[in-house]
Image 1 (cartoon, one colour):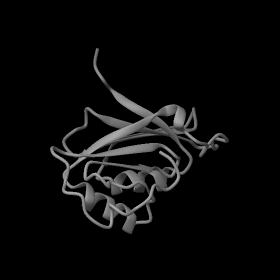
Image 2 (cartoon, helix red, strand yellow; image 1 turned 120 degrees about the vertical axis):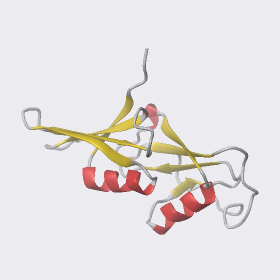
Image 3 (cartoon, helix red, strand yellow; image 1 turned 90 degrees about the horizontal axis):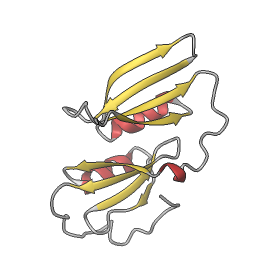
Length: 140
């Protein structure tokens, strides 16, 4: 058995690709299927192409998106500096649903409402402001 990827349906491929790019992922493969009228876009962290996310975009739309995707669960990514990443995301308009108050874990959502867990690599960073005082926004 070999892990291949996680697939999520997306409503706006450009917005979602931009969001995952803010997380540091890069496009590693794109398949445009004219007969099926869909695009499969694979993104992964640099050097980790074996652990990709497949963004599936139906050219004619997907009426169910962006509904609450909690039934999916979440994607999880480890990062070098959770505070720097969350600051970068917030500066680019991404809502931090669960701020990294503990220096270890945060949650954000993609433009298609997919929950993304961010985890600090190694030991938690020392708790600090503005994160300690931030409240949860929405749900994750």
